[in-house]
Structure formats: C-alpha cells, structure tokens
Length: 104
Image 1 (cartoon, helix red, strand yellow):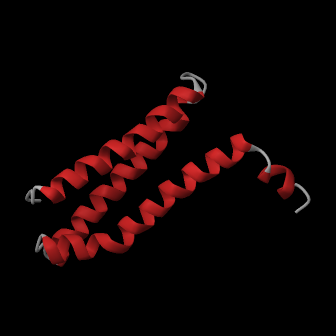
Image 2 (tube, one colour; image 1 turned 60 degrees about the horizontal axis):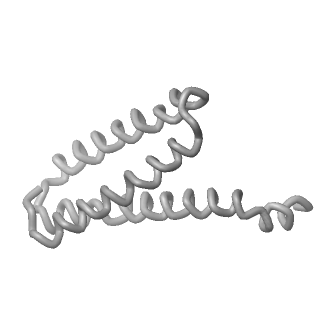
Image 3 (tube, helix red, strand yellow; image 1 turned 90 degrees about the vertical axis):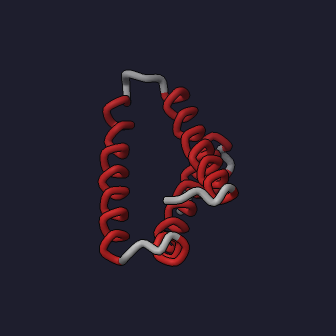
C-alpha cells in the first residue's frame, strides 16, 4: 500500500495501466454484448453462436501466446505499437461493417 502513491506518479506505469484497462473494458463489452449482436441482429442460432464464441476464444488463446514468444526477440516498443494498432484497426473495420449493414 505504501508503494501506490509512487506508482500513481509514474506516467510510464499509468500509461500501460490505461492501455490495459481500455483493452479489458472492450473485451468485457464484447463478452456482454456478443450474444445479443449475433443472435439478435444476425439471427444466429444458439448452437452456432456457441461455435463462434468458442472459435474466438481459441483465437484469443493462440494470439495470447504471441507476446511471450516475441519477448526478448522484438523490442517492447514495437510490440506495444502493434498491440495498440490492431484493436483500433479492428474497431474501425467493425464500425464500417455495421455502417454498411454487412452480412455475418
């Protein structure tokens, strides 16, 4: 508890915490709303939704191993750069898909 004031003054640490917080917030928004979007908007059956959710979960596990494999081989700044760019690009593609009423 004594270290918290010192951590809260560290801008580098707070930057990483904010990035991680935003990523987790978006992840929990996905978990909370994905069933409504897939089943309500795209009329996917409950069985098909469970397959989609499972495949996305497997994809997240596979991609989650990537930073551990790249650690020490690729500079941290480069990993962070791509870790920030990929969710922004994905969100833009998702927004475009919603705007143009693209099918599943």
